[in-house]
Length: 314
Image (cartoon, rainbow, N blue to C red; front, side, top):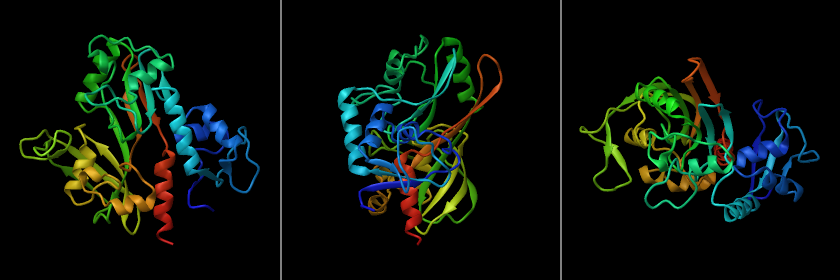
């Protein structure tokens, strides 16, 4: 298999899914772009005939030409300044998206790329909130540009007020998966350390006694020779919290050069950003009062990095 190929095993979460639909979600590209890759034989199911309507089976291996997929994304970005953003949950009050890497939660100084509000507007989702800044319409919780996964956006002022309060009181349960460097000594632990802005940079944050309280709980999911996959639950939602906390205990996120990650390991894994994904979100619906849980899956680049890490053990 060529070194430029990305491959991963299909698990039960994708079993029964159409090939083109799955490829679109994994790569963060439009359905049309995914179909184009399949028809050009640049994305295929190993060992059997691959068509856009092929139904994936548990244990299948999907192979994508890395160069071609990058070119496909670049073509799509050139065609439009907004992204094809997966909608996981949507009703009259809230929408939950699966944010791709490279999309900002909202507009900010120095950022010229796509934002979540732009992406939602592009697919016809109307955010009617008036209680927040126009550039941050409906945003009650954010993800870094380099972090992918689930993110909730409010569509009405009523929902905004209720959900803002839920996030402030830590009622919303957010679960992340992160790949951190090194072998964590414990199977589970809590990091309780205040976080504030670093004096050396406008963009970095650090552990500081005069910072805001920050609490991170983690459990080991899988161990490798050079890294550990963990599930992370946050009590607080400070900027860069997971990245800062794991860096502070000597285990920065793989690929996170801003907080001290080894660039050689990231290069071996073909990773161009921090390995961090928002996997699960549980909240109380602002109108019905019922508990809602939504789940995500690893995007293609993170899945590929995991497979590469497992290959290093063989």
